[in-house]
Image (cartoon, rainbow, N blue to C red; front, side, top):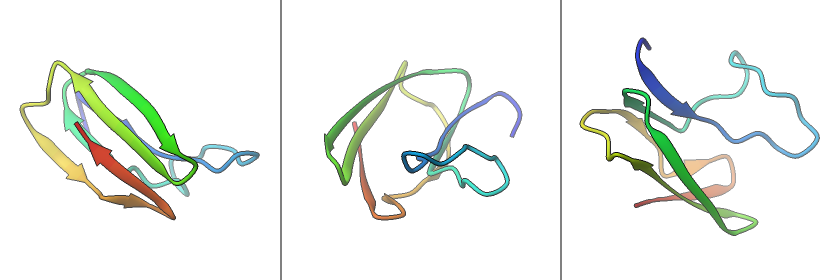
Length: 69
């Protein structure tokens, strides 16, 4: 996707690969992510500034719950 910010979660010890590691969020523009792990299985993520267009926004990435702010 041109001109977008995307995020993926990769298990510890694994190598990131755009082909095998799916994104869980994709938003228009180049935004600064703010990320905090709530626990080993939950993450909070937001963007500065807030996105004006969201292409993809999953609630889970594997066994990790994603909370958006």
